[in-house]
Structure formats: C-alpha cells, structure tokens
View 1 (cartoon, chains in turn green, cyan):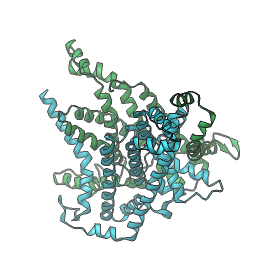
View 2 (spheres, chains in turn purple, red):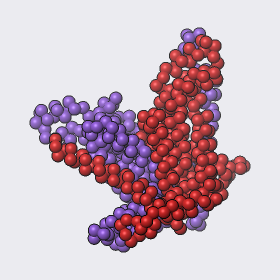
View 3 (cartoon, helix red, strand yellow):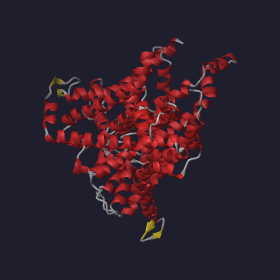
View 4 (cartoon, chains in turn brown, orange):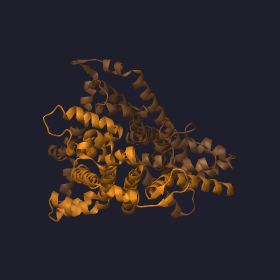
Length: 288
Length: 269
C-alpha cells in the first residue's frame, strides 16, 4: 500500500489537478480577470488599441499625485530601513531574552496595525491640540500653525513610519542574526575599526536584505490609502486618493482614465514586490 | 562597550515612546474631560464611551465587521486548507501557480483591487456589485497570503507523506485522512492563519468603503465618520480597534511564536 501511494505520487494523473480547480477558479475570478479587465480597458478606446488613456493621465494634478506618492513612499521606506535596522540591532544585542522577545512581539503587533485608528491616534498626539503639541507648547516650541501640521505630507510621513518601522525590524532581524561573530572578530584582528567592519564587511552582506526591505516598505506605503484618507482627506494629493475619488465618482471623468492610473500604480507595486521576491532569493541564508 | 549599552537603551526608549505614545494618548483622550489647553486633562470621564457605545450604529457596524471577518476567515480556511494539502501531497507541480496567486495580492493596492472588481462585475449578470458578498471576496483576495503561508509552513513542518501513507494503509480515504490526520496536525498553522485573516479584515477600510460604503457599514467606516465630527467618540472607537488588533496579534504570537513571515504583514493600510 505504501509503495502504491509513492508510485502514485511519482506519476501525477491529470485528474489530480482537478483538486486544485476550486482554488484556481477563485484566483481567476477575483484576481486575474478583474486585473486583466483593467489592463484591457486602460489600453483601449472605442474598441481599438491605444496609449491615449495614459497620455491623458499625464495632467498636472495626476503627475503631482504620482510625485507625492513616490516621494512619500521613498521617504518613509528610507527612514524605515535606516531606523528599523538601528532599532533591530539594538533589540538583538539586548542581553535579556525577555526584553528581546517583548520588543519583537511589539514590532509584530504594531506592524499588523494601520489605517483609520492609527491616523486618528496621530491626530490625538500631534494634532493642533494634540497631547505632544501641548507639551511642546509648554516648553516653548510652537508647532502650529507654521512649523508642523499633522494634516500634511510630513504628518503622513510620521504616521506611515508607525507601520514601516516595525515591518523593517521584523524583516532585518534574521539577517542581523546571520552576521557571525567570527566575521567581526576576524575583521578586528586584521586591524579593522568597528566602523570599517560595518562599512566593509557587515553592510555589503546585509545589502540584499536592506534593498529588499526598502522595496517592500516602498510598496507598503505606495498602496496605502486608509491612513492617508483618515488623516488628510483630499488635502494631500496621492495616487490612491485620486483613484478612490474616481471610483466613488466624486470626480466626473471617463473610466478609462482611472484604469490608466490604476495600471500605472499596479506596475510600480509589481516591480517592487517582484524585486523584493528576487532579492529574497539571494539573501544570505546564514540566519538558519 | 559601555557607551554601546547607553546607545542601545536610548534607541529602545525612543522606539518604545514612538510605538506606545499614540496608543496610550488615545486611551487617555477617550476617558478625559476637557483637554485642549492644559498639559494634563481636566478630569476623567466615561461620557464618550457611554455615548458612542449606546448608539445603535455602534452595534450594527461592529456586528457587520464581525460577519465579514468571520465569513472571510471561514471561506479562506475551507478553500485553502484542502488545496494546500492536495498540492503538497499529489500535485507539487501545482504549487508555483498557487504561490503566484497568493503573491499577487501584495502587488495590488486596495483601491486598485476595488476598482478592478467594480469594473468587471458590473459588466457580468451576477448580483455581486454593492453586496457584502463582493466585499468578502475582495477581503479573501487580500487575506489569501495570510491564510496560505501559515498552512503551507505547517504542512512543510510535518511529514505529510508518512502520515498520509499511514492513514491510508489503515484504510482511511482522502477525506478521512485530511479531517482526522492532517488537519489536527496542522491546526496551529490553520488557527494562526485564521487569526491573521480576522485581524486584517476587521481593520479593512479601503475595500469596505469603496465596494459597499454606506450600504453595509463596517466598524472602520463608522470610525472614520466619527473622526470627522466627534474626536472624543472617535477615540473610544479607535481604542477598540487597537485592542482587537493587538489582542489577535498577541494570540497568534502565543500560538505560533511569530505571526508569520514579515512579508505577510502588509495589511490594512
């Protein structure tokens, strides 16, 4: 009987694929076909192939939305990578395992969190009568109306970091653990300063993970909508805000234009996620 | 080495402050009296909590969110578990296709997913548009990786070939093998997948707002409405969202040690 199972495994009968049909049907019905519908309608006008919709999408307001989205994603991804790596290093070098696990758990819990409640929490903290705003005012730092506003792209940067930072921490911890102590000792024995060790040895090893982290964080921020919508409404012009406005029909425009915007952002996201996957395949495996 | 320790403590303190102050401030804000001119609130009160929880919309939206989250969770568990097992044991060549479908959601922004579903399903004669059903389907798409990864990891961690052979040599059919042998062995994976799906869908605003909007109000939609006109009551709702999300995550950590791979953390932004 056992050998029978094994021989059946070796040669997969065609009907065994039937078991996967429900899953594939779901994927085709709710992922593939809807996305292909978008691709097609963005590339056609009155039934013929055209790039017109993309040309028309290059109006100043949409160009600005892409610039803002790219800038916000790049800034929060970069800050997330830098600070996330620093905090992750601080976490793994903490001697107490209880503290270490508690901090990792905190990153785990907070990275699954975002959207409306997060945006609102930042209004409570740094809004015009926010808790920290009041404390800073008491010590003589006036944030409002000129220095800082939470309802702006700087405010969004700060709020996005709330989920970017823990995501980077979780991504980079395995790679940091993969840095062997022997490598550091060898470098120091050969006369390297700690600085030289980091720049010449550790960072090159970490580079694929750092780049991969950057791409994933970038995609994470680029696709975000709920946080921005709750915090700034239509005030900050982002791609996702524009697309959502088109979906809700708040702006009267032809559908093909919304589809073109959607396809452009889909391309950016896909490149990031594909890049992350590709780098993931090349990341150091020392952590295992 | 000594200054290293101080640097570490500073970094960790700043990290803790950044991660905890928004939550703690929101909790305090939801139970405080007037608090817009002094550093500390002028008294404590449960007024906002009483007000917001006594509205009928509070119960309705909370119930709606539970319905959508539980429906998505169950549907995904039923769809993914047998598929993952079958692919692992009988159709390994099908795995790349399955994995492709579970990676796609990471590349689709919520607004684009909503747009694409509206575009396609408004052209076919199916009564899906504007219904909670399409919301559940959309939530299933974004939560698919959260369900698949833990289940697939659990399947990789046990010797499913040996278990299957043992079960079948004792006369069990495929269904019995799955139900009585495989599922009990991968239960932690299924449960942490379910919890991840639940917390993601429960917090989902984008899809709910664009696909059903006011026709089937979910809790995050209710919260966003309140942020526009009553911050105090909104803060109580935000605390509830924080607590539900954090509790589910802690439960997952308790069950699985970690809430899955970081790449799975892209959720309701």
